[in-house]
Length: 496
Image (cartoon, rainbow, N blue to C red; front, side, top):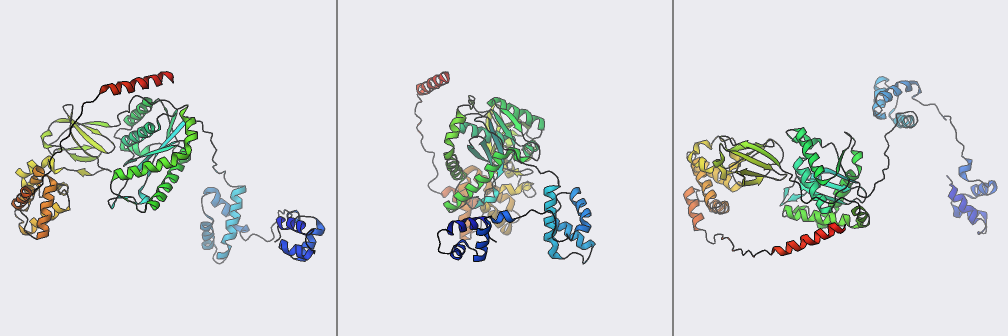
């Protein structure tokens, strides 16, 4: 089929070449076709005529009314589903090759008579006006820490005008994670937008014991930073379009950076955090000009961050455990019967008693799990070794696989005394250090000797090179340096 571009080229060549046949050949058409377009002076598109009639009868004409009813009741139904239903209803009437004809007919109907489609309305973004926040899961990227899968999320913040972005690692869509990630982003930015948009925060609200309390705390967080909160409509993720699009592009950038790095495995979470920090710096490098416009109108940060932790009060029961955020944790047995406070942060929990922090341990991810620290209860268990056999959380009392192997060894060789002997070994770990006992157990397992608490204690005490606390010299702090900084800050604020 000859195109308009070919005919224009033919007209240009006909005055340069020796013959019309040669000009037509160079334009990609036959001599006869070339003469036709030279003589008529028209382009191929000018020969085309619009028609509103069919060249052949539609094979679905007789059943089209029923097909339309399917489409009107459920516009999302596929042409293939309707076609298969017609084949079942009228055996032999429609051949498989006619599916494409039905698809074209339905496509035309949807474009001319079907329901109106939802369209996206391009928005005008102003500097410093809006920031968006959302969580995004990173599991699909296959990131590992020391060869172990690292299940985590990123609390992702984006300024809609400049697309400046920041993100922090978190493990659940809780209020504590929301508060810490959002505050980290604002302090890294160094300012606060006029409005803050999120989704419905359904997951975070459902994790809270009291949704009304969550709403109050979130409102207080926004008030602390002097910004106004906005929420999108349920099921309308496109209203949070900037951060949703940045989720995709950010994870794409992480994937590419991991390919350049040559490995998805990191030695520690801190190393992974440094990797993400460098990546965000690279992503934001080209946004400096628009970010300068944002800085002119961003609001100032408050004097300090707002405490993101939840404070829960408990009376420690006879089992020496508490249930915080739907997970069970052990506390020191000395606190049995006492009233304590638990400060729940996004990644850890602090135990406070008599206005002092007496313990801190990692927060469990998910719900319905437990974390029992043998150091909290070992003194009681040694006195009551019979309780170990059917203890509900017994699996938590194996600090690592070597301790479990030691217990299995004891069960094979001295089954009657296994519980008592293992608890003595665990008590030695409590008193002398878990690392030393672990090393002693490994030596006994390697040598094939029978494991006993007495032999473990002998090996631990014979170990040379015990760890000594390094001497740390603390120099006096000159407070005048801080006074000078405060004076400079006060002058900048007054000049602003």
